[in-house]
Length: 200
Image (cartoon, rainbow, N blue to C red; front, side, top):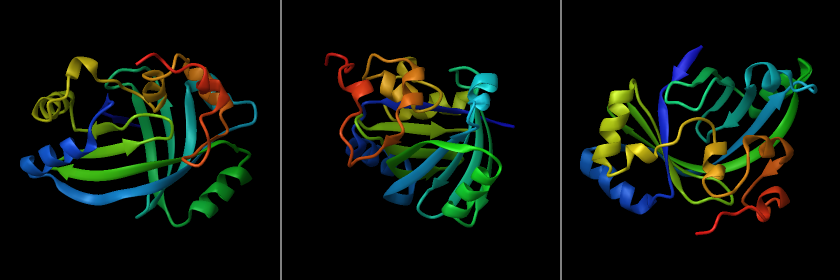
């Protein structure tokens, strides 16, 4: 599996970052759009239990991907992924279900994609959270360099899946997300999170 070398910076100003990205010569690849995803596991949750892994089908607006992701630890090198592009969101979902996996959660998010050299930069917004940025780079040095150029604090960077974003705003553990079947912009904050928001 390939290591995803990426980092997130939480609670950012997307408009200010757009100005900085343009000044650096970054190119807007995809404007802000809605992404849909289903996260899958077997009914006994063996992927999560045995390897902290999950399968995912994601409609990214311009393409549909199917992935297996595995979170070994929450460091810059801790996330592993195998990803392919597929023709159909619904057919990919049906394929995984035919293999015995179940959709454990459905999630909608918003994402704007930028490219700067070999850096992939995403301006992200998930329901019930503040905006954040996610940057994928070929190595850790390149990540630290772009954090500096964008005036982001490397010592405040977070790593891993989106649970770290929610943990930045809510007093919950990663396990809380196992029990949230849908995260969308139309739904109110789930009860698991509603009473756990951290003081500003």
